[in-house]
View 1: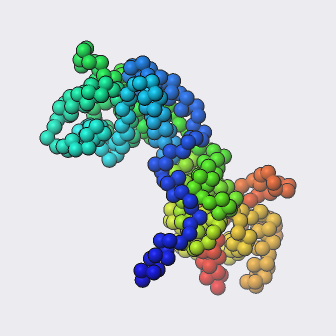
View 2: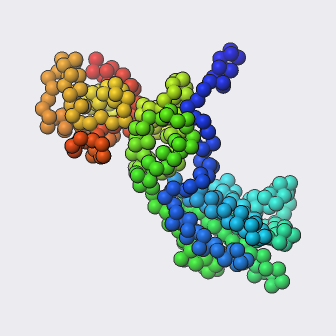
View 3: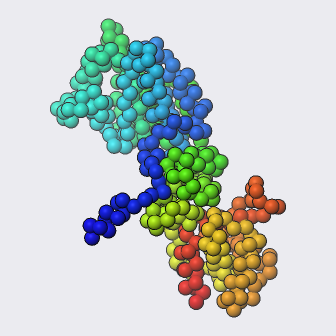
Amino acid sequence: MSSIIEDELLSSSVIKDLEVLDFNYIPEDILHREEPLRFLAQMFKPLLSGISQNVVIRGPVGTGKTVMAKKFCISLVNLARKQGKTIEYVHINCRKRSKDAMVLLGILNHFDSRFPDRGFSVQEMLEVLRKQLKRRDAQLLVVLDEADALFQKKGSNLIYGLTRFSDESSMDKIPVSLLLISQKDVLSMLDSATLSTFKRSNEISLDKYSRDELFDIVQQRIDLAFHTGTVDDGCSDLISDIASEWGDARFAIELLWKAGISADHQHVDLVTPEHVRAAKAETYSIVTESKLCNLERHQLLTLHSIAKRLKKDGTAYVNTGDAEKTYAVTCEEYGEKPRSHTMFWNYLKEIESAGFVTLKQSGKGQLGTTQLISLPDIPAEIVSNKVEELLG
């Protein structure tokens, strides 16, 4: 038994650096977020002169809000250090710390990991924070990630207290700056007194990533995380196509990671589109047999033909011409007469509407204009096996 465990633990992997596929990894280059990063630098430039600023980053999940904020804050702290200035940066996830006292405790733990987690009021903790910053002659930059969680119950006075930190004592000017991150319009959740400390122009809105932007991100992670030549070229296309429905880079990276793990489980040295489909099936529930049962016989034959062709070629896509040829052969195998080109096209559109396949226009490198067909949700082998059972 121990030898089995050791064999698996010591087996080779297509992945050379697993950390690159972690959601907390911060790449050297944050792709397609150059302008928002430049805007952040413009907004927080006064910090280098000891003047506090408050900024909001807003956008859907997986649009790079957190990784962009971390990249910027680390760069700012390093630049300030080179200038002989101290900026303390603390990143708090408000889903995990959804109360004022818990947020403050997280900030104080940055300075003293042994600070007691009870026995101090919010006001007392703010005073301790003031002393910590004064002792270090430092200003503070707090990132409140998923900041809307602070307001879900009865609101928060902490943001107001932090933004007015320097106002409470004319003798000790200790700038505290805030960077709020949220999927929601967090500014609309602030009371008028707190809102007055924010400038409406200091808000960055991030859009979902486009399909091509996701392709670049996936390719970057492949280059950084995988051994050379261990990922089939079609994987980047397929992953970016799947994730483009949501514009979610986190989902794209998760698919890439799980596809690599799937290849390792099979002890093969190449990640293929089949592994991507298996990763999608694991991440989202696969199509149920009951949905397959709703398909008519020639719809099943069309789906079976596509799956067989993708499995045979080992590619991410099959063009409609090749799929129709395979359909004709498959019909003969099951004693059916192939229907016309128009009927085949109708079957294809019907199984697309049912969510079994996706179609897209061919691009560069394809002769002529044709449609490319893919199975985004489920491995071709599983489709073939299930459809074979239904076809009898």
